[in-house]
Amino acid sequence: RKEVEQDPGPFNVPEGATVAFNCTYSNSASQSFFWYRQDCRKEPKLLMSVYSSGNEDGRFTAQLNRASQYISLLIRDSKLSDSATYLCVVSSGYSTLTFGKGTMLLVSP
Amino acid sequence: EAGVTQFPSHSVIEKGQTVTLRCDPISGHDNLYWYRRVMGKEIKFLLHFVKESKQDESGMPNNRFLAERTGGTYSTLKVQPAELEDSGVYFCASSLQSYEQYFGPGTRLTVT
Image (cartoon, rainbow over all chains, first blue to last red):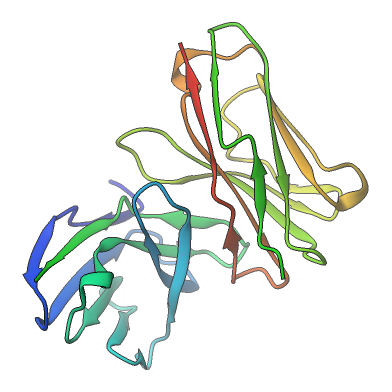
């Protein structure tokens, strides 16, 4: 079983749509959770950290369910510029980041 | 402030040759990490430096890979001799605290 599992997509949505990505992780000792964004042939960039209480940053909302070992990312009012691969990332607290393979989002006009 | 830089951006070498990748972290970042993404797979951790010391090298695939960070500034990752399966994108990241890691643009290595 992979440590971090994501639906690879692609998710094709029109501008203005709401889209949600999910991710599950296998290591119950994981302590930190993140969503990174990666554009084609670019480096991963931190989008947001994920907290148990849930957190929101503009159009982006992240949720964590420790009991189910499940993380989600909701994007509202999708923009063309949101097209990218979204990487679910966990850490056991010793700095090492464990990545999922990513979910590709394509936002069309 | 300059971000993490990596050199070269691309490298094409033949099987059996040696390649050295370089990473310059963000100034003042004591933590430096190497990751690798091979085609079709997820990004995987290779190793972690704190200053010049190797904190965790559990992700290094085998002894053909040697990472150094002399003086606790830039780091090099040498692959000797390179094999076909070493092809991929090698990312370097740095951080002040352990969790918020900033990634460099990567070095795309192709072994033929």
